[in-house]
Length: 454
Image (tube, rainbow, N blue to C red; front, side, top):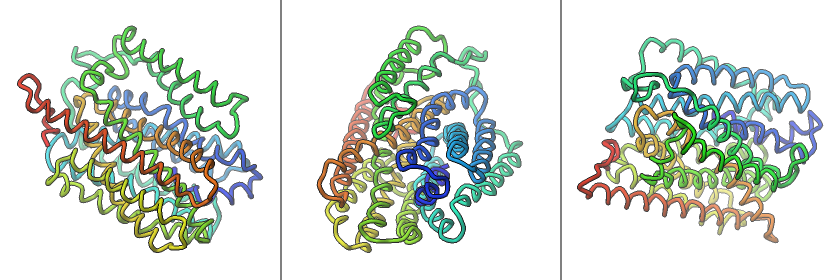
C-alpha cells in the first residue's frame, strides 16, 4: 500500500508530459489516492470488525490490483485519476484489516511487539522503496510500469491470502456480534458523516492552490466542521451501535495517541517531499539518483522497526515510542541546519537517523493504539490509527508547504524545522500518555490493559 502511494512521486513530471497535464492539475494524481483512502478508513475499520478482517483484506487487494491495471494503461488524465481513486479505496479496505489481523493473532507478549515491528518495517520502508523503484522504472522503461509492476505483487498477495484461508483467525466469542450475542447494525449515518468530515477536511488543505468543482478551501472547511458536529451527535446520541465508542475514547483520553500519530504522519510526508525537492533541485540529482539517496533511509527504517521488540523490551512500548519521536526531532533539526549546504552525503547520513526513528515510531504507536481498545474493536482502533496518520500526511504537508513558501530562500530549512516541531509535539503527547498510564497503574480502582503493562 505504501509502495503504491509513493512510487509515482518521481514519475509525476513524465506523467504530466505524456498525458498533457497542467502543473495545477498534477497534484490530483496524488490526491486522488490519498483522499478516498483517508475518508474511508474509519468505515473500513468497522467493516473489518463486522465482517472479518481477512475478507476485507482480500477485497481491498483485488480493488487495488484493478486500479493499478487501469492506471497503467490510462490514455488520459481522467482515466488515471479514476484509477488512483480505485487504488485509494482498495488501500482503505486493506489498511485497517492488516492491523486487525495482527491484533487478533498477537494479543500480548514479545511476539506482538515483533509482529508490529515487522508491520512498521514495511510501512516505514515502503515509501523510500517506492521512490527508488519509481526512479528505476522511469529511467529504464516508462512511468506506466510504476503502476503495472504492482500487479504481480498484488496477485502474489491474493494467492497467499487464499492459501491461508483455512488457518482461521483467533477471535473473541463476541467479536463482530457485540456483547449481546447478535449482529449489530452498521452505523450508516455515522459512517457517512465521518467519511464526509475527513474527506472535506483533507480537501480543505488540498484545494489551497486550486479549487475542486469550484469549491475552495474555506467552504470545504465549513463542510468538514458541520459533518464533524453531525458525526459527534450521531455517535453520542442517535446510534445504538456507534461507529466509534467516543465515550470510551474521552474517558480514557485515548485521543492522545492518534494525535501523536497525526503529527508523526505529517512530519514523515513532509520530509519525503522536501528531501525529494532538495536532492533534485538543490543537490542536482537525477530521478534515479534521488531514489538511490532514499535507500539508506529505507534500510534504516526497516531494520529499526523489525528490531523494535528489543528496544521495547528495555524501555517498554511507550518508552520506545517516545525515544523514536525524539530521534526524529533530532534528525529533522539537523536537516534544517544542513539541507541548504552542498553536502549530499551528510544529508543522507542524517536521513538514516530519521528513518530509524520513523520505523520505530510507526510500529510502537500502532501497537499502543490497537491494544488500547478491546479485541472486538481491533478493526475500528486500526481505522482510528490509520485515519490519524493519513489526514496528518495531507494536512501536515500542506501546512509545511505553506510555511516554506513564506520564506525567501529555497533551501527548505524552515520546512524541516516545522516538521521537527511536529515530532517534538508528538513526543510531548506520548510522554503525557505515559504519565497517565503510570497514574492508572498506581490507582487502586483501575488496572491497565494487559498488553500495556510496560
